[in-house]
Length: 566
Image (cartoon, rainbow, N blue to C red; front, side):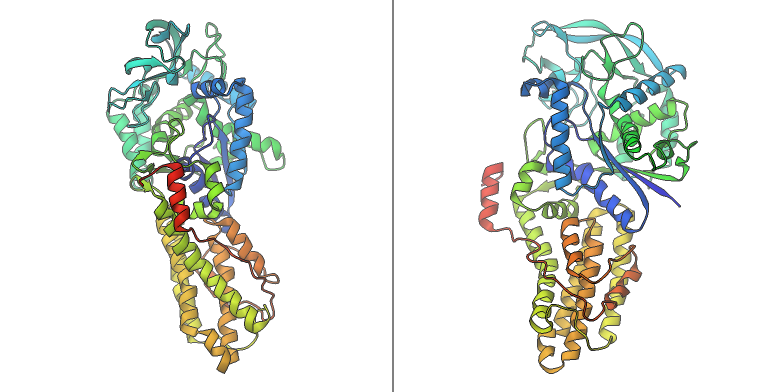
């Protein structure tokens, strides 16, 4: 039996994450993990905060804190927000953990032993005003590829091209803003990715049609342009020390150690769960990981590192590490013409979002409008419409109608009477088809299509009530009304079960309404028949208002607060 390892791109430590970060990796990874658990699969969902590199140092400086203390506090904030959004990590680790230090240094040593590490003297920008080298994000300037004027020294946020700080046009210090920069020499280690390019291409060739086009196209673009060797050390104080003579005071590049954080966070989890069989059975094919199905989630700007640099590290080590099987790359969620951005403070951030609406409202909206095939634009009007029409108007309306009729006519319990007829058999068949569609979409990681299928399942409840009209039937044929409402309670149980990957909190509340009824197991079309299995007399406790309608005046206020067209 397969085991499923799920990782989402590590949220960076430099601040509260925005909704683009959430929908680009963490949220779809959570929904998929929840879906797999519904099927009874053995799932391990791993994430961690990415804590090294220049942005951490800059953010700590701005906060007036020691960088280690800043990272500790920021990790706690991100973990809390993730839990409030219903992210069901098995472990949420930290790349500053000793386990990541150890595994990163081990892999660097293995790459060196295999001939994939080389020492080179590099020419780097040095700030006279700051009296220090300026690696990566310590430098900002104009991207030579697309002309974006606030490109960072490691990668352009606009076009995703990897950069060297010396390539920037009109570079300046991110610390002081000084343009008094010099080119000086510094010795660094390089991962010889060019020597691994053919092996990487052969491997990625096997993923065509398996990975989304956005993932394979980015990987092939980089390979076609000529995969360059990558510097994996930096002149920084904060990070994983380079265990090599002559490299005292240097640390490993954050994009070298960050993906290794998936492995080290798994080790952190295993240390907290000594009876779980150890971490290597998830990551080493010589220790049991040959039966693991590994799925990664990330936004498109992270794709090059996960399709090329991280696999190069694992392949080049010469050790039997588990490589990713399925990679789900997302496009960008834009905010009124500009990309959501932590560094630019553009968009809606997780903490603010939870002040405005329940986490499930955000989960539903973001997943049902996930930027899968193209970039997607966020609008407050679209958010309101999604909540009001789908959550309030379809699912919430169905549950409210059930609660009203059962409470009014049958004392809040599953009514007795009536027998299943042709309308119910037809309903079951329609649901079987819809559930098979829903599960198929989830297995293919098609979130928009899965959400559409789930909406159609919810809609079947309202269609059934409209056709059977129990509020009329109860006046002339109480058994007919009883049968209809008992089946409706079966639909409530089914909806609660199937909806949990999208709206876990609301699903839990719905499940709790059926006090005497066991929860469902698995996800398949056969579940449709479960709607006929509610025992007469089973207590039904009204869940209250599942979702609140988003008002026009709220949309106007939020738009004014967070920006957007008047």
